[in-house]
Length: 137
Image (tube, rainbow, N blue to C red):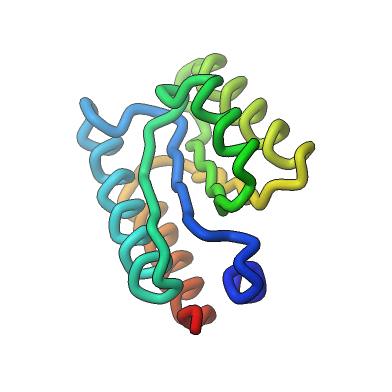
């Protein structure tokens, strides 16, 4: 990320969790972690905008816009389902594949579950990422 930001190959970030981030308490907890990650990694360290989304709410047109612009660093996340969630999984994989096929910056993270220990590990991951990048000059 450091070199992509320095060369302006990325100019903003997006963090998209493929699952509910509005109605379930665990989903809201994931969103809170991602909002903090957007703040510490993108806004504070890289000095660039970042958005947090719930997937697959972001439709095909939206993702085509990101793919077309090409200056976004996308982080897509999903939790291993406790019950079948084929739609979320299909959208997660399709989004990742579409971005990668067009040479866009994308990383995917799979969480074991949405329990506190997994969310603490996710938060630590982003804290470490923020520690290891420096702001653009």
